[in-house]
Image (cartoon, rainbow, N blue to C red; front, side, top):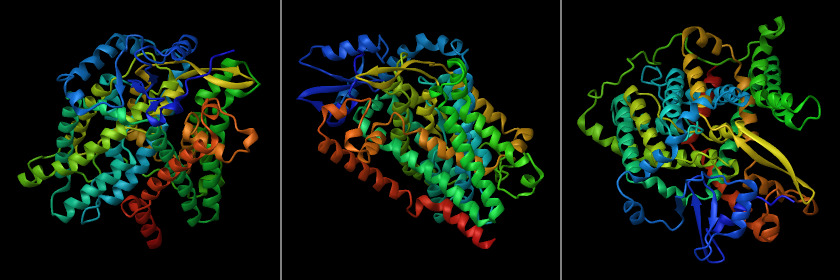
Length: 552
């Protein structure tokens, strides 16, 4: 009989029976027992394989203090990160010839491009100048995504983490625009200085080993945040479908067909590994390319017949040429602002740093969780340093800053995973056999996104129905739930008691009333945070669209 997987739920309280608990660099949980190795942990690692690098002995402690961090020495964390990842750099570029890597490239291309275009709508609406000209739009967001992905895939320590413009960054950008407008400050230079100060703070945090503070971020926080983002993506997709019903019955029905068709086909094809038809290799290939096939097919559906072509469905709003949305030059004139305003940009720069410190590191934690069984080690300090350099570049260009994306980062790792099923006590479970840890999928998805900024491809991009991306949002939201223990426990709440089963051991280790109450409290926290997304500041996009629709 196979040994049962590690019980991650034991980490919830940070301590087990008075014994100190630590978290390795890749997020794996260990329990110290009077200075001796945990025999069960050793047995599990021998049976299932260690998810950490064999030469990675460093770990995070839940009781780490700022003094402990500072005593590590100047740049020690970054140096150790480089020592950990450098031996694997050559393999990162040569171990790429696998069908999963190619499939992941196109999957990440669509899952990175869709949110970028969606958030650009928010930015266009929220950064309009007095004459109605948006200062930041689609080109800036796509360019920022391409630059960040390219740089991070080459120089980052953990290339599985996908970078891009997030919803919080979009809201932050609109807030900075509002502040600059109320203070009569030129927005673009003020925005640039904000990112410059933030980049300096990023670099200082990395140099002084402050990324070790993510040891305070437990599975509780990561999985709550993961479910939150999944719910936001589901809402975005459903909201996009709902808006199409304001444009006539024919448009609504075709848009509904495209959205639900994209979601349904992507979901079914991605589950091809469980089919009984075809040989395993064919089923694996279909599952890897399922989302890509669905998006391409339903993007072509509106052009397959004369009736469909005559239906005025909404397509992606992209410019015809590669230039800034406002027509300004690409490099920001940093002197086009008063010295006092430039210094005052430290304040929003600080808030941006705090946002990225949590957001990026959580996405990094999720994409290299212990469940993924990665072998090459992590590089939190070095990665945050590289993110700081990227923020500096985006600041000089006056385009939105980028950090790790959720759920794209963990979905990227999952798309590169080879799994196998095994049976424990009559219950089938899935185990990760291997993850193709390499840099090509991240690099080439960013390269393709950058290529889309050229004139011919911008035209093609403008032909994609927005409803197809709504279906992709639905798929990404649902695809984020598997592997999330919080989502699994939520499902168990609605499951008949006699039918409650889990591939994890918490049902056997923890009494159901305690587990239920813990899950309900976690759901309450997630619900409160989700409600915040409907506040005035977070709903700029919807209000703007409603104003435009009312005017129409």
